[in-house]
Image (cartoon, rainbow, N blue to C red; front, top):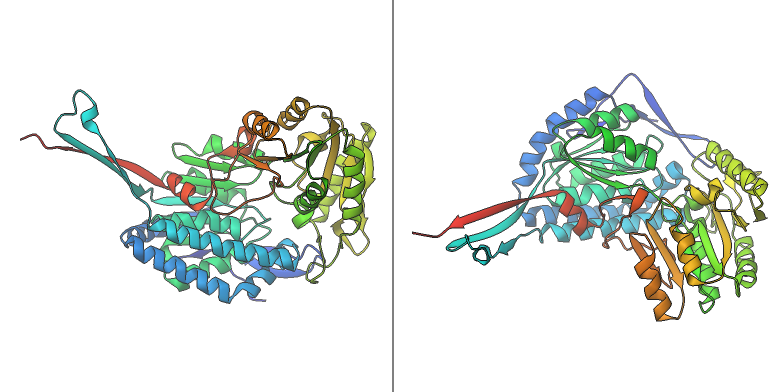
Length: 477
């Protein structure tokens, strides 16, 4: 097993310490990488300054061509990347293939946006002092972007930060989760092979010291972070005068009104609640069902979840794989114990599977008090909470009874109910007759309240990765 290290300037660097990467399903060692250090960050920033000069001097068409070439190369190596994702994350092979295909689309959308970065004419003569003056603004790359990504989507969430930043002409420093550094390192190699200047992309695996060195460095102009609220708060306090983009997760809600399609709501709850073992920031965690259809929905949901196959993520027919670690399973079980003590009903699940301690049986909890941790915090686990409500105002209050606000959804045939939900729910995205876990990679994606600041999606990310430069031209003789 050949160890890789921080990828800076097109080559791998070493250090005195190794990070082990283990397969969550078995605990087997699948790779080692040299741990990045603050010295590596300093070197990467020095190199990135040269990379920025090279990439920003390319034409928009040249950057477009390189990123399109990278998308074709990723398609050719799709199965290799998918298997790497399974071994790092523990997601099923089908989920991993989906992530690779999404990453390809994110790359293509970013390539296309490279050709659309423009400005706008400002009618200066609309102002009393603007006679004889012409104004317009252009967008220019910020310089160096720092990206920090979590373990659950090592490829596509890295792509959502790296590809738009490169499309705009910036150099990028990426710190992937220490649990899943292998696939991001593969991505950096691929981008350089496609033609990105090697100085313009660095990947530094490591821990908090690496993240702190990146986010606080004065030459870094944008910090884009996806992860926990706690770390997001730390970054916000320590980043200094620079732009900060945060996607901090949620405990997303799905509402089934009395006229909603029960079968479809169940289908979307299962898809949204148990994909990637619930380790998705827009996983379905809280479900609010009108009291008239509560029992029917809960019965149908249990039947559907009972049919899920839990086990080896490399098997084609596995529906739910392991969580990232046994410690995460133990954490969720503590939350479940607290919920039951507070009066909640454990409908099914809640136990680890015999074949792997990292496998948590898909779990359903009902009648959960809103003060319980499982209601208020982000579970990030294959756990769905189902509570009844009487009217739509009560449902909206329940959805908003959270410090988070990433995405929420409602199933209803009533357009008035749907519009009331859209207007009053505090979330960055509202979905009608679709689960809150839906995301198309080109759409503006992000949250309100503790779910973050800013939006991803290549077009919208580029707004954060560029600066507006205003030009005023006096035509008076």
